[in-house]
Structures are given as C-alpha cells and as structure tokens.
Image 1 (spheres, protein in one colour):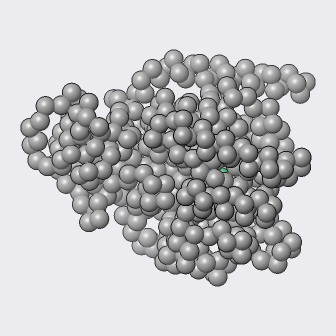
Image 2 (spheres, protein in one colour):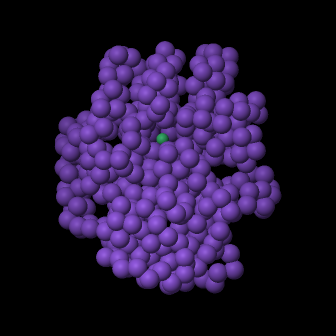
Image 3 (cartoon, helix red, strand yellow):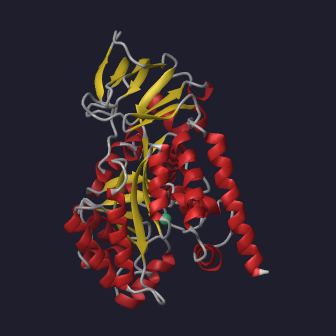
Length: 430
Ligand SMILES: [Zn+2]
C-alpha cells in the first residue's frame, strides 16, 4: 500500500541532520521513495502532517518488554532485594501466556510512545514475544538472557539460545535473534565466552547487563581483581556487536576499552535512578572515547514506563547535572542516541532517507511542542506520548491516529491473563 505523508516538518536524521518541510512518499513495499515538495502521486493512505513533526521512530536498546506485567510490583526495594525476593520467585512461575500478555501491553505502550524497535532480553516465552512483535508490527531483537547459577547448566542455557535463533527464522523480518547473558554475576566466564563465540559465528548481537551497581563492581574486584568491563574485555567480549546495558560503575580505563572496541553502551537513566544504583553512565566520556552511545528504558518493572521521549530527557539532564555543564552534550546528540546510534547497532532504519524502509513516527505539534524555536529541544524536553499520532515500522502502519488496531480488545485479553497469573501466585503463597 503506497502511503503519502503530506506537508510535515521532517526531522530526517540524515547525515546532515536536515530538517525540511516536505511530503514523503512510501512505496507499496514501505520504502521511502521520494521526499519533496508537493508530491502529486496517488496513494491508498494519505496522512495530513501539516501540523506535525515527522521523524524516525525511537529505538530502545535495552528492555525486558514482557516485564511490563510486573509494572508496580515490589515497588521501592533495592535492586538485589527486588530481584531476589520479588521478581525472580515470580518469574520462576511464568507461563508462555502471561509472557505474551506482558509483551502485548509493553509493545502497545512502546508503539504509542514513538518506539519502532527494541532490543529485548528475557528468560521465558521468547516465541510469544516474537509473536507479539509480529502481530503488533514493531521491530524486535530478541535474546534469552542466559545464566548458569544453581541447577542451570551451560548446555541447557545454550540450548535455549539455539531455540531462539531457530524461532526467529520462523518470524517476519521484524524479528531478529540476538544472544545474551544476564550479567557477569549470574553467568560464568565459560558461558559468557561461549555465548560471544556463538554470536560471532552467527553474526548476531551480544547483549549483557554490566556494572549496574556498586555491589556488582566490588564483588567482581574481590573475586577477580578487576572491574566488570575489564573482566569482559579479558574475556574478549568487547566489540562493535556488543551491547553493554548500564555500564555505569566503571573506571576511566574501562571507558577507554569500551570506546576502543566501538562497543555500544545502552544507558538506562530512569531505571538507574529508580533502583538507586548510584552512578550515572558517563555517556559524554563514552562517546568521546569512541563508544556507540544509545538509550534504553530497561523493563517497565524498574522504570516504570517504556517512554523513550522521557528517557532522552533524563539522559540529557543527568549529563548536565553530572558534569555541572549545561552544554555538555548538544541536544542533537541525545536525539542521535535514541535514533541513529540505536539503528546502527540493531541494524534497523533510523533516518528518513530515500531508499530506506520507513520506520517513521508522526508527532502532532501539540501545545507542549510550540513555538518552534528549537524543534530538537522540544522533542527531548517537552514531548509526550500523547503527541504521537502515527507510527510506521518496516513500512507498515502500527499506530493510526493514536490507536493500535484492536487495542481495547488486546489489552483486555492481556490484562485478564496477567490478573489470573497474580491470583494464582498469591494463592500459592497463602
Ligand atoms: Zn535490564
């Protein structure tokens, strides 16, 4: 279906970072065919964007989308208590149905707040998360967060990952497989090394939580005499296909190692603040060192939203605060972190350019985005999911006039499933 987006203010995110007033024509295959004034082509769908910003969809490089089912559960606990006492015991009981339900709620939220691609790590229901991504039309890079503690073995965990790789092949081009280990404190060095070796062999992304808390680093230094990043470096894990989630508690030398490897840092400022992890990733220094800086929300259980606009704002404010310098990072760079840099590592479109697949959102110029002295600053500091009217992923419409098709029915079904899961969980405890 050809689509014509008329007369929008287009934040292209192309190499010159041009902002132009233009029409955008998408071909039947959803490829950007033309960007220009007064395009006079027949199209099945015409979107009047004369009062809108048209921009690339936002890219969330670290989340656990299915964990949306835990939003608000176990509030107020420190990270390791929250995981050990609330989340992990509940996760041990997860069913494919409830994971799917969590993914449906999470993906609808993500789409309606302008996200068109996410990098997922989870521990169950990987097929169901892929199904939900396909059904709701969002790009998803999916990995099973491997861990070999307790009774869990390396072979068993690797088998789960082989399944993910096979399962992704049965899904549409929206879905890609990746390989992940949960964290250096839950995955052995042998498992991490094996996982990265497989990722290299299959040319897939490798994704890991690292140096999130002071505790992570102190115990790593006690056990191995080095920080968490240096440990991964010694295992040969750092390269341009590795995504390091958090990477906040690090030394200057470790920042340099990440930069030299051109590895990706996924900065999750809101989750870090909420879990009081105590250090904010040095994204200004990472960027200077050569790392690919991107942004993530983490799961809705520790954020509690999947709102990437809000994430850009927190990321920008926190660097200013951290360095006592209001112009530490240009706003354009913050938008780049949430678009082109995310696109680069996930291998998905992140700019509006002729010949690229359309991953585009149409954002209404609601009062919070006016006047337009600085469109980029407006998007980072004053935007809201409420302004997102249309979302197109891989050339297909996912959000139409602020609605996901069949949204109410999908949400009701998902919520019933989630409520049933918690009723059973509570009954077992009682
Ligand atoms: Zn996480």
